[in-house]
Image (cartoon, rainbow, N blue to C red):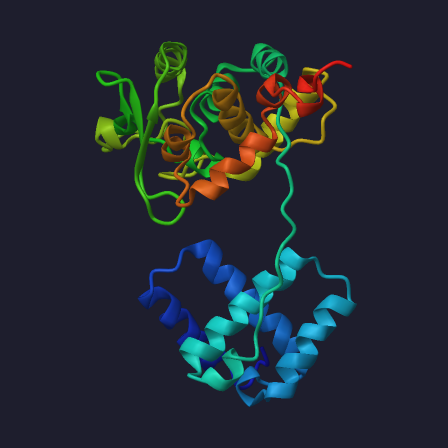
Length: 292
């Protein structure tokens, strides 16, 4: 966005996003999208015309933007035109492309066992165990507080996660034992004045702040290398593996949907394609043909 006229426009957009309680990640993404459009347009976005929107969408594709990134940029622009500028005619020019559906990468049970076995510290082992053993997202792991662990009911409470939703997930005896070990060993730098239930399980060195998901991702990849696992997987693969292995254990897919916090059953059903044990159990109709 240009320096002379866009600052007030950006401020209005930020106020509109705050009023709608958009999260920090969404706000950064929307602002960055508008800055990219302004840089291409070489003038303020509030002067854009319908043909500018069409040509910018063409520009994104011609310059090699992925479908996912292209859709993210256009989502930010649509917010600007539809909400902040009230230009519904321009918002109507924006369209999204269907993203390819990819089978999520998963780890085998043996790979998950090896990963946890070689975790360099108790903290890393606990965090990876939460990702694999409870299907938590990275952000959900690092934001956990002591009060979220309910050992009486053997559940973990996930507070205001993706989609601003709460949910409960299972707390296995092994995970609980690890958490109790960690609670005795965790740093207590910033616990003073914080009620026990509000204390972060994985605090950073910044007062009141949890460890970052980026740091957790680095620790995951270090552990992956130590385990000798060569698959091109990310930290999120622990969550994929959690769902896939539950399916292979014949857990009802609707229960898995609740544990993962998916809104649509179709999202959870994607793991059926990854559950190789289930696929191997299917008998091909070729095998049932009568012998000649």
